[in-house]
Image (tube, rainbow, N blue to C red; front, side, top):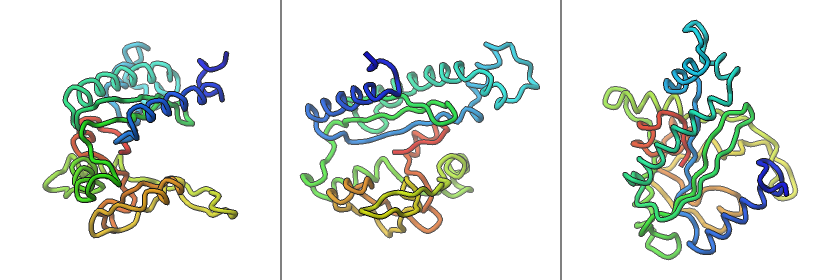
Length: 238
C-alpha cells in the first residue's frame, strides 16, 4: 500500500528489489553517475522561475528557489531528461548504454538530484578481463585532474567550483568502534598511477574498487568526466 509513497520503507524495499532484479539479469552495473542541481547557479532555472512567478529582476535566485521549490524540481527534471536522452543515451559519451536505472532523490534542503546505474556495452569486467583493460576503460571516462587555468580556463573553473568536496565528518561504525571521518571517504589517497583495489574488501567497506592517479592538490576532487562536466556545468560524481 505504501510502496508508491517516496521515502517509506516499502518504497525503498521496492526500489531495492528492482535494482536486484536488474543485477540478476544483466550483471553488475558498469558505472554509477550522480548529477546534482546547483539551482543557484543555473541560468535556465533562474529564467524559468522568473517566468512562472512573474518575478521582478531584483528578486534573488536564492529567494525564488526558496519560495517555489516545486518549479525548481520541475525545471531540473526537464533539464535532466533532455541531457540524459541526448548526451548519455543518443551520443553515448560514456559508451553505448545497454541498460540503465534512474532514481531521483531529494537532498536535505529539498533540492533534487539523480542517481543513474548504467550497463555499458562491451565494458571490461574486474576479475575477468585484464587489469590493463579495466584501467584503460576507467581512464578514458573518469578523472580527478584539476586542469591548468591558462590552457583550460572553463574546465578549471568548473572543477574548482563544482567538484571540490567539503568534508563534514561524522561518527561512522568501523567494526565494533566508531571513528570520525568523511562518509564519502575524502580526502582520497595520492597515487602516481591508477590502481585496482581488492574488490571484496572495497565492497565491504563501501569504497571504490579503484584509485585514480591523484596529486596532493586533487585529494578532494570528486571524480568526473570532462565532457560531461562541461555540458552539465554542475556537480557530478562518477
